[in-house]
Image (cartoon, rainbow, N blue to C red):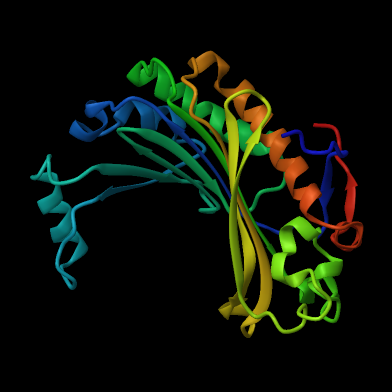
Length: 265
């Protein structure tokens, strides 16, 4: 389906909690078998911290040093994950034998995120000769807190579009619903792209159990993609992500978050 077009903006009160991009590829067993020394050298300036994690499940209480030592001696016990982090630990890069993923908790604009992913992906292709990607994913997790926007007394059906609110839409139930969750899979342009979007109400234990509304949207394509075309597809997924969020919210919520035009890069 074609989501209605809307101008791109940046919000002063950005509701984004986390942005994740995961690029999957055919298994590269060498990533499990040996330390990614050359890969690290190519990403170390932006991601200086490193940690090796294993899927091996050890008994609770086992010292981390012992667990890592045992894991190193069990090459077939579980998939390893090489995790790199930026100096402020706001950006986290994860490499395993089947995927490369970047997670950010301080997202501001797409161009910054894209640039942070481009270098590691180039390093992946250079060091492991990745022939193509089997899945390209871009996930946006938004949490809308009315208290942050001075909208505590405004009902959800005045902030969100009817197709999102579900049981919150009728006037007679809007103030009584404490928990609601729904999920939809939507076909998107370009060809072979989709989004799996979950949305609903939840309690935020970090904010005195305030009732918040979350929108968790994973945009993806499972079409085999040549490395040279990966970022073109990511750009297209990002465009759909921007449009979907704007399609979910009313003008009142849009204005409350403080939109302003995108500054030039």
